Length: 169
Picture 1 (tube, helix red, strand yellow):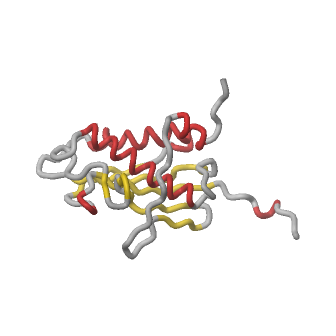
Picture 2 (picture 1 turned 30 degrees about the vertical axis):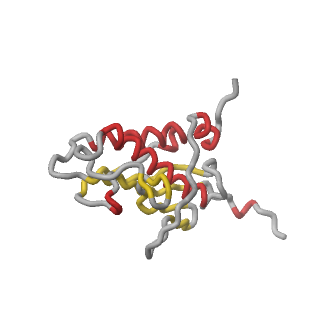
Picture 3 (picture 1 turned 60 degrees about the horizontal axis):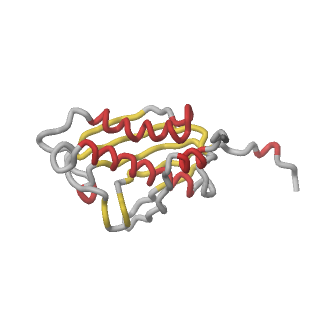
């Protein structure tokens, strides 16, 4: 039995794969790498460019189980952008720095938003171990783009090679 040491291997062992990064049609970058940090804009639970996993307010049109699945999908989309900015691999992730979970809520707002967000936070720990532990915010809002039930943004530190060790050419 082999020990899974890299994030890519742990993702595969969980039976998961990253979706393709989905470009935006709007005036912003879905993700930006600055130095060793990747800043990922809010990701919604897309099955394709034009289809969401589920739509509506959590606790009204969207049940807790569906919301948990949507959160996990949003996290995978965010990690897809991280991998894109790290030459296609999650193994370069040094630390998940921050995750923000936004939930669309209606008149009967769910009081279990933090518990639902745990599905994303637990996924990050399953993939990255201690490097997946992170501070987070969980926020209920009245509306999200495309009537999405959840939107997840994150900031991620990548291991940066020490350029002082590179021999001069």
